[in-house]
Length: 270
Image (tube, rainbow, N blue to C red; front, side):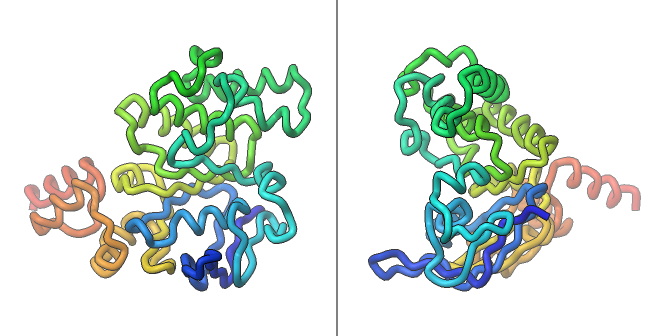
């Protein structure tokens, strides 16, 4: 089985700051996982360990059995793609087409295959009309889709999305939901870092909560959002519906409007 495995992993920056401590995680390729927690909890550092941008100070990270210490980040990128929170940290080409085509060309794919992949990735992200544009002259939200397309084009087995809904409107969020459905059908693993609890509750079956450099909880969205201790330590919020239901004394495990309606209907019947 293809897996990302973190085995007793700690990471310390050169300045001595310990960002992750004794992390143990197994993420299967077919999973879509959300990692939540306040800023500084260690979320970004831990996902960068998953694609080789960080190498563990202690312990081992393996991707489908490959130890990241033995491979370059470029080699690992064929398996684990990383989409930065800020697209300007990732984009460096002068056209959207060239940005998306960069990695296929780096891997020496034939031009016909490169064009085919670029067109497919652009269609998935609804950005074909921007292929000839300078990425710095298009809206920020579209630039984020360009960076996602530049990872999709390589067809990795796992994709890391850092705050994908940040700055997105309803249409942009709809495109992201379509992306998750597409990746699920392709059996591509997804790991996302986000503060968007509605996005987490609606679209991720597994949620990992982090706080103070550690993983403090790992379970379903209901497991995480109904646990007062986890919410307090990780400093996350319940969903809007969850907060309403909790305030009304209807339970702590309600996540969506439909669940709230169903509980209210049951109460009225009884």
